Structure formats: structure tokens, C-alpha cells
Length: 270
Image 1 (cartoon, rainbow, N blue to C red):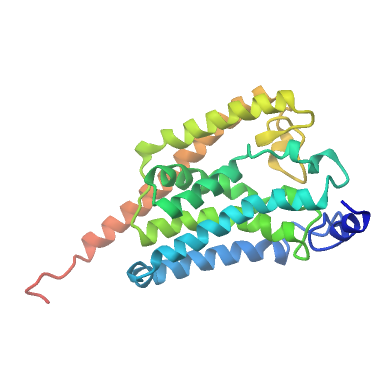
Image 2: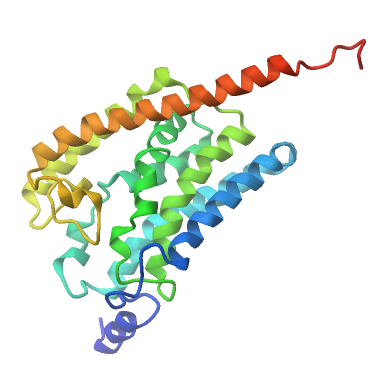
């Protein structure tokens, strides 16, 4: 790549930025989260209209393509920008072996195919483990809203969450605790692949199992040994899954009680 290109991408929209360009709990931190919440609320309010649209599947197609574009956008960016200022920016240490990447891919395929199997995986993971990257976006310490990476990161993380709610509101999909084995098996398989990659790839830290975390990730407080980390992550994931089940259980119980107190009018009453 010509030196002039490298300098342009380094300092331009596709560059790496400077330390401190993005701040936790700032306006540009909360803005994508607010957009996500507003999108979910509006989708719920207009769910019947959206479901009745003749070309509703076009909406799902666009969302799916956007998610795949954001997934591939990271790698295209690194190919153009180059390795940057450290090994952490090389493609070798950025293989698609992270939970967020696969939930995004699964969400895109779910939107294309209306797969309930992929919904069962994403509805559990996105609404539990998927919340942490929104609260502490550790990899964005040097790329704020003036950089492509900022938009790629947030769309990669909020679109799968939105897609889960979209399928619940528009397609009537429901969380089923009996299907919790699907996301857990997925996490176990992905963790096994990540451990192998971490062992053979220098400076690899897939699924944050190796301890080389960026920013203020919560995983910094855990031991660096990846087997010990997995032993901690596994029961933690199950605990989060159990908490999610409790939330859905309470929501359904409240909804059922409300329907009992306000029964639908009969044909005579109408």
C-alpha cells in the first residue's frame, strides 16, 4: 500500500484515532443505546402495521445485510488501514471467534430465514452477555464518532439486540427456557475453538479468555489463565440465563394477571 494511503487512513475516517477520543458514559456513549431503545419502543407501538406490510421481508433483508456489512466492515477496514500501531490490529488476532460476531451473523441469517433455532440462541445471548459491550465498550478507547470504527462497533452490537425484539414483536417469536441448551452449547463450542486459537496464535485473546483485555473491560479482574476464565464464565453465563428467564417469567405473569382482571368482551357485550 502506498505510504500516502497509509497516512490518509491512519488519520482519516478509517483510522485508529487517538487515546481518549471516546469517553465512557458520555453523550456519544449513550446515544447508540438511546437509539436502540427508541427503535425497540417504536417497533412495539407499530408492530401490527409493520407485520401487515406487503414487503415486510424487505425490512428484514435490509437489516440482515446491514449486520453482515458491519461484520465484514471490520476486516475490510483493517485490510485498508494496515496493522496500525500494534499486533492487536492484525487480522491474525481478529479471526471471527468472538461471541458478538457470531450473534450478529446469526441475527442476520435469522432475519433472512426466520429461523427459530437462531432466535433461540440470540434471544438468550443478546439479552444477557450482549448487554456488557453496550455498558463498557472496551475497544472504543480511541475511536469516537469521527471514525468508521465507532459506527461499525455500535451497529454490530445493537442490531442483533434489535433483531431479537423485532422477531418477537413482528413474527410473534417467544423466549422458551427449554431451548436454553442451544446458546449454552454454542458458547461451549466457540470457547473450545477460541482456546485452541489462543494457544497457537501469539497475542490472541479470543472471547477475552487470555487476559489481554482493552479499555476497562470487566474481565480485567479475572485471572489470565484461559481455563480458569472459562470455569468462571460458564456458571456466570448460566446465572445470567437464569436471570433472563426470571424476567420473562415475571413479565408473562403480570400480563396474564392483567388479562384476567380485564377480560376481553364477549360477542354479546360487543
